[in-house]
Image (cartoon, rainbow, N blue to C red):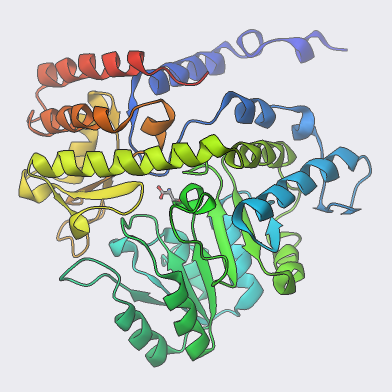
Length: 418
Ligand code: DSN
C-alpha cells in the first residue's frame, strides 16, 4: 500500500490543511448570523467523514445497481425511517444532494416544460430555485410570482388565490428563503385544490422548527415537502423530499435516475445521525431557544431604532430595514463592515426595495448558529449592541477593530461544540 494513503491532510496537502485551519479559526472567532447556516455536532461531522464516501449505491435500499450495498441499505433505511418519524411523513427520499436538487426533482415529477408555477417573488423572500430566470426553474417553466402586501409586508392569501384563479398554475409553492412570518400551509393547499394544482412546501429554513412542532407542519397539507438538512435541522449539507406513499415511486424515480446519479452515502449517513439527534427531547429545547433568541434580538434591534420587515418575526430570522437608522448605508456595505468586525450576515432585499439586489436596503439575520454555540435570549442585547456599533461606525477601521475585540470575547465565552 502506498504510504500516502495513510498520511494526514497536513502531510499530503499543507496548503489545504492551512485553509481548513483558518476556516476552523474563522468559525470559532466570528458570530454567525446567516439564517441558513449552523454548526453541526461532532457526531454529524464524523459521520460525514466515514468510509461511506467510498461507495457507489445507485438505486434504493434492496434495489441497487452495484454489489456490496448491505450497509448502504442499512444506513439509508435508518435515515428514511427517522425522517418519516420526525415529520410524520409517509415517505422520505434522503438522496437529494441539496434543496435545489430536491425542488428540481419535484418539478420534473409533476410538470412539463412550459407549465406554470406560482411562487413567492425572490425580491419578497422567495428562493432562486422557485423561479429565478437563470435557474432551471425559471428557464423551463412559466413563473407567476406572488408577493407580500405593501401594508403589512405579509403574504396576502387573497392575492395568492386571485393569481391562482387567473393563471391556473400546475404547481403552487409555499416556502421561502427570507420571510419572517408563519405560513398558512392549509390555505395554500386549499387554493391548490381549487385550481387543480399540486402543492410543494419548501421548508428548508424552518425544518427544525417544524420537526418539533414550533412551526406548523405542511406534511398533512402539501403533496411534496422539500427541505435542506443543514439549516435549523442542523444536519449535514444536503436535501430531502417528503411525500405521500402514492407519490413515492414518482419522486424516487425523479431523484434517481431522473436528476441524480450515485447518492452521497457519507452524507446520507450523516443525515441519519442528525435525524437521531433531532428525535431527542433536547432538540426541541434547542429549537425553542432559537425562537426565544430571535424574539430577543428583534426586540433589541427595534429598541435601537431599526425597522424590521413586517414588524418582527415568528421564526428564526428577521429582515432589518437599515433605512430607518442609516438611510445612506446599503446592505452590501453593512455586510462588509460587520464581517470586518467578526459578525457574519448577508445583505438582503427588503420588499419593494429601491436598491439593486447587489446593494439592497436590508440585512437578513438568523439565530440558529448562535443558539447552537450556547447564546441565550439574555445575550441578544449584546449582539444587537455589537451590530449597532458597527453600523454606526461609518466603516472606521479602529472602531471595527474595537468591536471585533468584543466579538472575540463573546466567541471565547461560547466555544463551538468541537
Ligand atoms: N442560500 C440559502 C439561504 O441562505 O436561504 C438558500 O439556498
